[in-house]
Length: 257
Figure 1 (cartoon, rainbow, N blue to C red):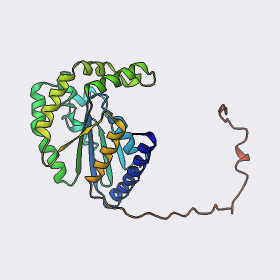
Figure 2 (cartoon, rainbow, N blue to C red; figure 1 turned 30 degrees about the horizontal axis):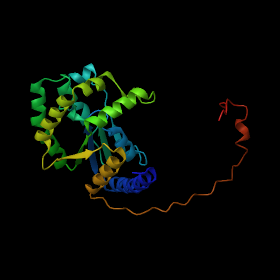
Figure 3 (cartoon, rainbow, N blue to C red; figure 1 turned 90 degrees about the horizontal axis):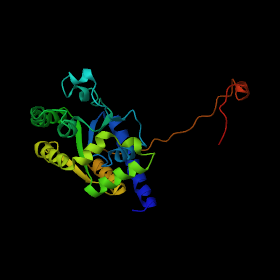
Figure 4 (cartoon, rainbow, N blue to C red; figure 1 turned 90 degrees about the vertical axis):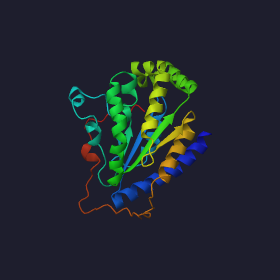
């Protein structure tokens, strides 16, 4: 897809995301969107495309770091539950409670007993969210072996992308098939009628972003609340003074560009 066409289509979808935002604020709806997938699957790019033209107070992006020593002693879902939306909010999880079924399982951070318990309990937990009125959407971004290798090599070569590449990512590359088996088990246990998984083919990141956003919008029964006509008020001149001159001599930064 040519860049101009991609940007044209993305702009249309982002207008609809603004309409969705207005509807969520007006109706008090609560929405949760989970993004999971292999390392370098493009989760960050999709989330950025969704969130860059809307309010961060409505579209809250949650990307939690590794759990602290204190959090490790808490109920597993506790650190995620505190980020669930209130009325008028959309919460986007950049990785979620499904860490237990993915990286924690593959890397041995959770026991098989803990993983099996999670896979048994999480469908019930998600059904409770939906029963309480939350709209829950779960996306798995799928990337091929060749494309993941290409993206990892690009990160290695590009100093602007090296921050994206951790020792955990390199180990994840080595354990490709372990992640595949973990993915399969996760989908088998948690792809339910009430809370299905939606898989996004994302070897082509631009097409993947557009397809994902379009699908997300199709899953929510929002309506346009109408365009508000805004009129810029005139400046109040009753107490006018030379406010530009009043800051002369202050510490301005050098204008090098």
